Image 1 (cartoon, rainbow, N blue to C red):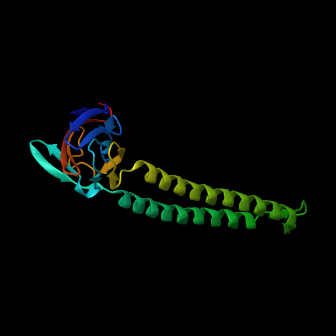
Image 2: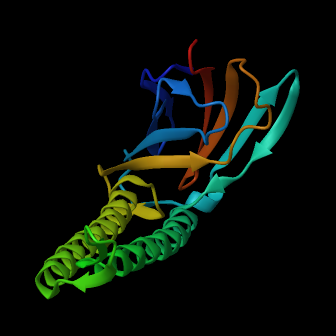
Image 3: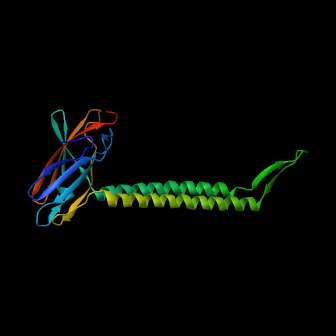
Length: 211
């Protein structure tokens, strides 16, 4: 059994060895469980690992609930959707910044005699618009950089379909849909990981945040 983030040898079969541990010691109440899976091909032939063949089951008060595996492709689509929203918000912020800068150097005045008027300083306006353009460029660049960094992190961290050569290790994060019960009790799961002809059954217990 794996408890609270301590990695353990969970299964050794004829052709493969599997290690599993929770990615975090504690489980966020409404979060997705994330597990780190390591697979070693100990056979003399290539073996296949397919994410679609992974099963996740949650145990709640004597009942079992099937949990969906959140694949790399799903996570990438979620990140793309997040980037669209971020781009829209960045565009709105940049537009507001540019609009405010376009009014810089303009103002009104009142003389001691009570006469009022307006003034305009091209120099102040140009400085403000130059500053706004630089700020907007930095804002857009930061948004793009964050998106690229998130995509790279998914590519590097999340487990995917793979064919393991003899002796090869492979692994990554396995993301699972949020648990059925959203209470504060400890959560128990069973992961069934198929590697080639081997079927690895892993029992996992994970405490809530603050436990």
